[in-house]
Image 1 (tube, rainbow, N blue to C red):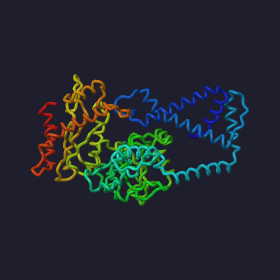
Image 2 (tube, rainbow, N blue to C red):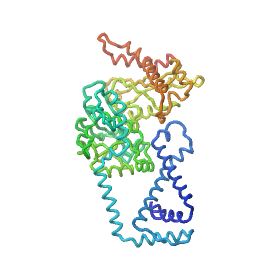
Image 3 (cartoon, rainbow, N blue to C red):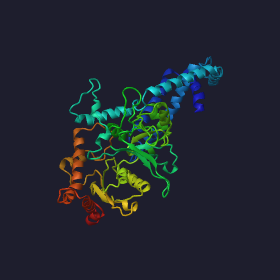
Length: 517
């Protein structure tokens, strides 16, 4: 960094004096193009995702953050040099040493008071803006949240009174605590980023599970060392009081609203993304404000009722340099998929008897990455083993069809709680098995990646939307309909114990042995 700040500005000055303007402009455009490519790769799910990406594109995507970092520091240092100590250059066209000497002389002749004044002015402006501008509103998070609320909640609000310019209605959203007595009971999963946490055993995951429910919000970190007797860290707070104190300005964002939790649960593009975090990428995405995450109060600290950090500058710097942990007054939350993309973890923590997980990740090669990650973390943190055989889902190499679209396994609660009844995990994976309707088989012929097409392309048409909806309806009907109908009691209520046994019989290891699938 020292070399960048002190040697790049005179080098750029020399290049400006030596080469034609179009050459310097080409270099600048190349730097901007490299930065744009790295930004797009970092904010998408293609780089580092499942499958085998193009090695050349992957290399460019990895180099782009470093190129941007060097370039932005070079430009900033050149701006500071021109503002504080403008050099007087009277050198021959190709004399680099002369330009270096002129810059060094101008820097050494600088008055210290001028530097302090400039530093104080910039610092004061940063603190003022950090105090008056809410860090959670000045980001893509708020844009994403507003669109989610408008598209899904606003569509169900028949008494809407939208703003004539924005089209938004504050009454579209609701406080999450209002759903405490309703059914179904929502559990919205997010990820608490621990990029610089002290637990060395968790340096690969770099996240913890943070849950929003109508009654409680918070997290619990089990000991990172198996068999450790240390008490779990973390805290839960009542939802109606968590983040309930207004932040900066009249347009406050106090209280946990359903739209806030849902938008956080889908905040995939963020400078800090758990195990996918990269310091150069952190810097690049923060500088361009590609931030879908949110800063929320730490339930384990005294400021747990405050909606946002009082001065966002310090939180922004933490996000910029990846200094995130669970010890600060405010924690950084992102997409729940950065910890558990299937939502199994929090259900196992609550000892749910029947867990239905629908894996809609783009997993054409059936690597089961999200499933394996969830099973490992349930075993490591909660000491609950999940026995699930997914071999029946394998693809037939000749026909290209899958053997099944779901599998059932046992959740061994009895290993953690003596005498507890074991649960059942019904794992549903979108697949074409050959028994689908003609329209779905036709769509598969025309689109070989279906039903594992990338979600990077959001411009889906009617045929694509309907094909996925119809396939989901068909798979769930095949997985649950007969088992649910056979286990309805005389009083009309569902017998959960009998339903779990039926699912294991129909989709578990016994079914595999019976069919040979």
